[in-house]
Amino acid sequence: MSQLQVSTTVNGDPVEFLCEPDESLMDVLRDRLGLTGTKEGCGSGDCGACSVTVDGRLVCSCLVLGAEAQGREIGTIEGMAKGEQLHTLQKKFLEHAALQCGICTPGILVAAEALLKENPDPTETEVRYWLAGNLCRCTGYDKIIRAVMDAATEMRGA
Image 1: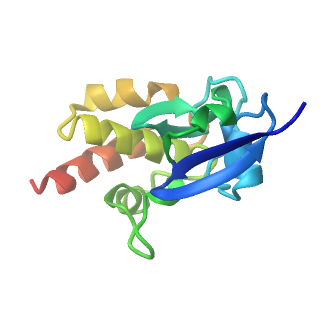
Image 2: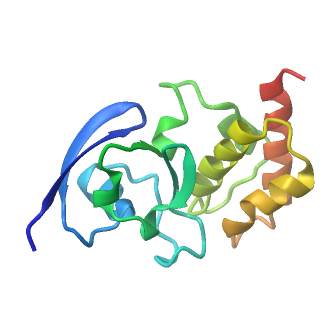
């Protein structure tokens, strides 16, 4: 197979890379672009650990081909913080101890950010439904939900 040249934007920066036609976006992000915050959990779109946004839409990057990134805006966990300044969600995850092993955390943070962009004032039920595709084997979810709810309140300035 011959490699494909792809021009895209990742976390606001223009990026070009070569990839195999059957290479996943997750593998491109990790192996070609060195953005290792995106984690592989299952490789089949069932766990959400590899969640990123493509043109603002939440996707499992293990189910998207790297070539499909052509001309798109990709958002990853590396794009959440602004330099040393953590995103409000990241701060709240630390404050609420909403992480343990860290495999699921980047995907959950990206998913929660996508939720709060779409719905800045979600109910607890809406947060739970939105994050239902992100599996965590360590925390039991309550601390994650509390952190997202607290972040939403702070981000609204309420």
